[in-house]
Length: 86
Image 1 (spheres, helix red, strand yellow):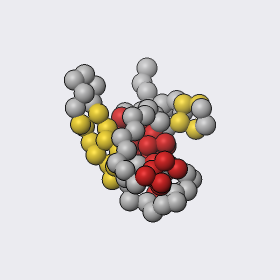
Image 2 (tube, helix red, strand yellow):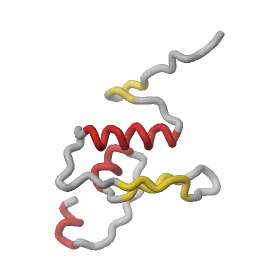
Image 3 (cartoon, one colour):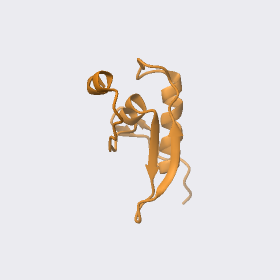
Image 4 (cartoon, one colour):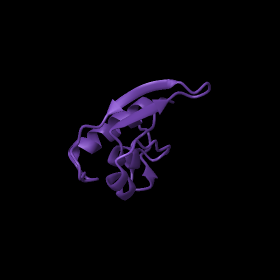
């Protein structure tokens, strides 16, 4: 963030960290698996400086995780899916 604030140049960041992407980016581009194609573009309209714990970023995180098909994570522990049949 410091580099961007001083240079004001376009920056492309590749990350697997959804929270980091939402905290730093104006747009989050979600790619598909092979072949890598743009699957979704999420606009991040939260004003800067951003609060990592804001409800708006939490909502966007749930959206991104849903698009990726990932279950919610609490801390570093994945929440098990309780919707299963035997």
